[in-house]
Length: 517
Ligand code: XMP
Image (cartoon, rainbow, N blue to C red; front, side):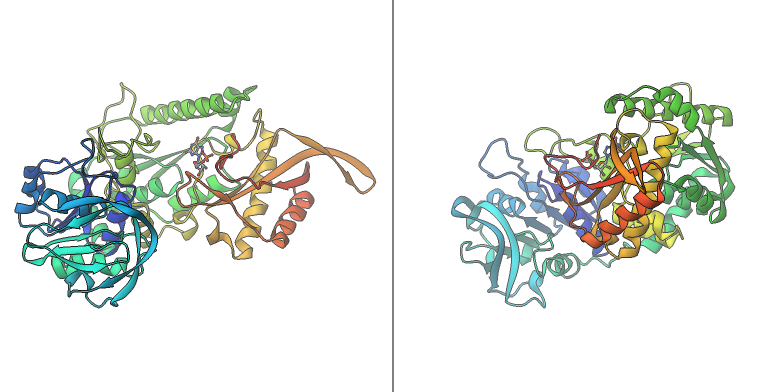
């Protein structure tokens, strides 16, 4: 049975994915569609609710995204948020004007009319506003349900037509009762039953996978990252030994990480697990290379070649599985806006791999392609993947290759792995791990003078990097307490051979990046 569906119509705002995630957190399945998706297509999906997202500044700007009045005729409840709220007013004959004073930040609203949207929410509450236009005249049949000091229509509605609009952003955490407002729209207005539950997702996906795969074999490239690990666990539950996971260990992972991945998937899950150890082969290709982009290119190409050579040897046919997740598809432009007023296509994701011409599969399977990262993690935990792997911090594809500045050698890999392991151990013991989004050790191509006992030393310098961030586009260096840094430094210089100095990176992004290369 398909889940009940809410459609998030994307008008190009920065919070489109956040709205969709919040809807899912309310237990309602939703998909993001472009604002210009044909009405017939929307109708054929049979949604029980539609949410218009925020977007560019002015509905009067010809290049801004607009929508046909027909959408309001199909009888499905609609909630317009921010620009989406102005689109509701503008399209149905209301008036939108520029504010004399933009509203930005936490603003108090007063609810002044009964509304299903505001059921059980205090009359005065704080919401997040960010707009320079506002709705100055409502379309016929609508009335105001809340106001702020600077906004006479903070929200309005026509409950007979099930059309609702809020100028503020209920999806951001700064809106005190935002989650409850979205929940009220979904449950009180649209009548969703809350059938988006991860246990059900696992059961129904496993059943679908079994039916699709039949008695054929499936191959999955396992990186040890969250997405491919969860995809592997899900496929293992569905088809057991018909699944072969190929894990290419290029020798540029953190200390003991390759063994941990192998142990997890051979001991806890039923599958064929193939580990390809190829550090020497990678080091040979990387010999003498110091340019970061060249290193990335070599590591990427070599990885691709080793992986597909293994698949060739194993024999192709059957299915090829990947850990693609929903944001990968949106970021790659499939689910996103193209053309005017659009959020730009951000990146093509490393998760979506194209096999070489000579390798043919019956089809590609992407069992997580409708899930957000937090949902993938929930599924992973329910499937019994160790916490350490499910909550793993991001680790770049080229691994330690971009954390060893200059030429990569076996000796340097060992030094960095040991130093990084000490850092991870101390951070885990300190209790501050969950506050850091990413932390790691870096080995610059620098040696410094030190003293040990009566001897002069001339050895490696280790850099420590730790950041806090929401999205990795910007980041701040983490204010790790000095006593923790002192323990890290003492232990690294005492326990890791060939390191006599430790420094802490206090650069934010921008101007720095998270990684040093
Ligand atoms: P930067 O250094 O660009 O890092 O501020 C932002 C995030 O991206 C990760 N990163 C990479 N991930 N391949 C990857 O898969 C790469 O080449 C790469 N470079 C950086 C970085 O670890 C951080 O999470």
